[in-house]
Length: 197
Image (cartoon, rainbow, N blue to C red; front, top):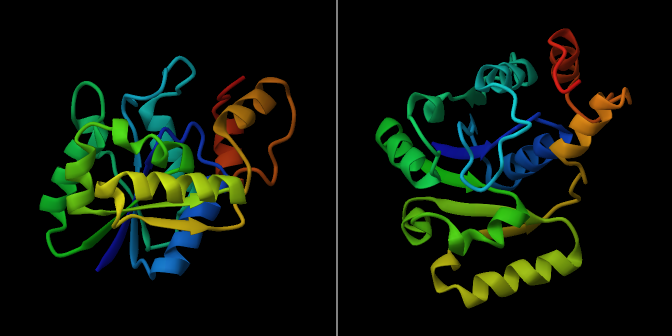
């Protein structure tokens, strides 16, 4: 089975994330996508990070009724920082027959050479990312060309929805509507639980 793995802080999950994952489902013919909220992201400060349970619940709400999507708490079952390499090793054991595709944002793609055991990751999964504009596409293609271990990675160019979780949090904090920027179920969950206020 072709299986996408999409990890992130998802603080909160928004329509930019949704568009990216749906675009890769269409492009690669993915049959399943495992969504993995990070426990303690090694690359990000976690000052405004809501609890893992809230982030898991938002993902479950966003994809309720769509059997292609599975929300995993795999990184919360480990202590300490969440390294993608360790998570992928566990998933490889759990889904030994699946063809795995790791979906990451363009900013993470362009710094992938700094990731823990980056070369080993590219041997076990196909790394996939998408450019948001033409200049970024050129940078990503150059990065792939200059880093031999990234040759098998997929760089796509979709009409990307320009959104950030920081923007969503700031809007909520300032009482500005986020309707249309996050899935309706996520908006309801944020409102019902007074998140980011």
